[in-house]
Length: 123
Length: 246
Image (cartoon, rainbow over all chains, first blue to last red; front, side):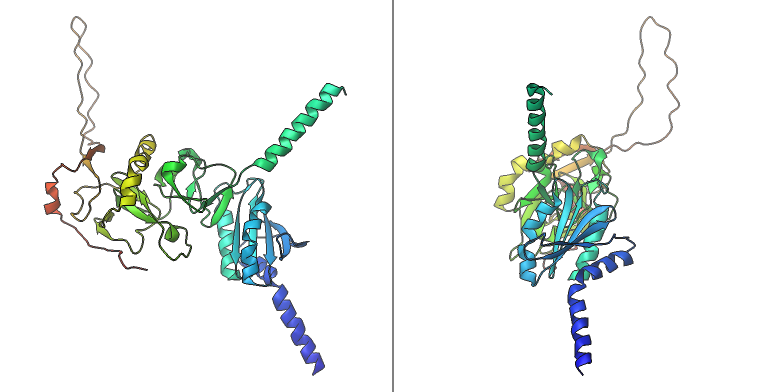
């Protein structure tokens, strides 16, 4: 009985923390090859963030405790784009920030596809 | 290293770092010209995004909402290849629909393109349009906001005049429901000319006429006093109203 409860707790815990992995899986399913996304701490206020590269672009995905805290972090997310072209998107309890500092995506098509996949996965 | 060189290096570093920190972010939403030059194409990010470049012709090709620039112009000069919708004359554009945000009340702006043109977006909901031969005409009233903004916003036509882009071919006049400015499209068939110079040998025969009729669009703005009798002889006149559509 206790063992079953432990498994349940672990599964629930995994479910809560696998938001970023779900996004990475969704990108893979869409034909992208994201790098390993490593923990980068609280890049956005109140968020647990992981960052890596996808399709030659810099991406940061942050998970928040609530949709409200995620939405509040939206304005701060533009600072992560820096002096590059990029996009930020809030969907559910997650925020995605994508920047193109190396000008890999001049037409914005890659960023557009990545954000749309994220929005479909995280909503 | 001399003191002067050190000072110079320090000044350069200061300039470089301050330049990097000062780069302003310009927020855009939706499809828009990348630089404003037709050859540079379009940026295809649909969601709110940022660039460090300010929009070119911002006052005529864009409308803003909360500091976000929304391109409402004809994307064809910039090499647009996606689905396109043909329009004629001035018409409303609903920004919140265009950039897919939910608001309590529609944010209505006006496109001031004269004559036939294309947009990537279809006629907005809750606005009255009439479709005639696959071209959309605004069939509603023009409000005071449109009339106030129009004198400066019609400069969009000057901006586009220097750019080449396909336009919808209009063969009949607009439907009577359309009350905006009318541009007449005339057939202009080029006629070969022979120059005769006195005292010189006769000129060589003109090059063989290919028998090809070149259609050229000549733009002429009609004013309110112009009489458009052709309104009565519309052949294909489909009423496709978008009023009330969600």
